[in-house]
Length: 113
Image (cartoon, rainbow, N blue to C red; front, side, top):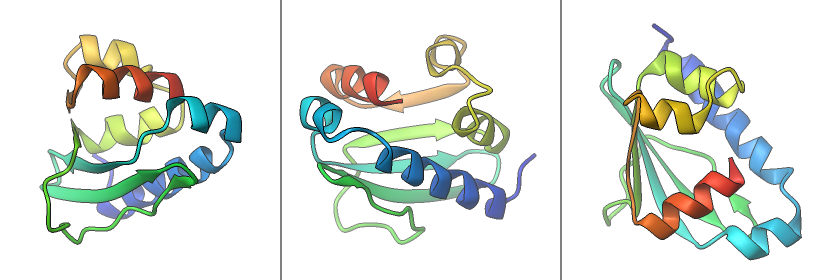
């Protein structure tokens, strides 16, 4: 089981990876959304915001409104997903990652990850 610090580091890396997405791809696929990432085995939830200019750093401070996109994942799977060792589509199909979002948001996120 990965630690909370390892999960924070993975999410910080995800933010950096979003910075590498081209402006053209962001313009096509990014819609501003609030995000939550519940790390089930650690009992912690991280919150972030996807914007046209990138992904805001994740925090543990709950926003005033519920997240538009909610992910539930284990700590090890979160780290593996960000490191590219776990395929998102396979993780979704295998039940290792659960996403509560609109179908349109799912399609957009798939193209960005």
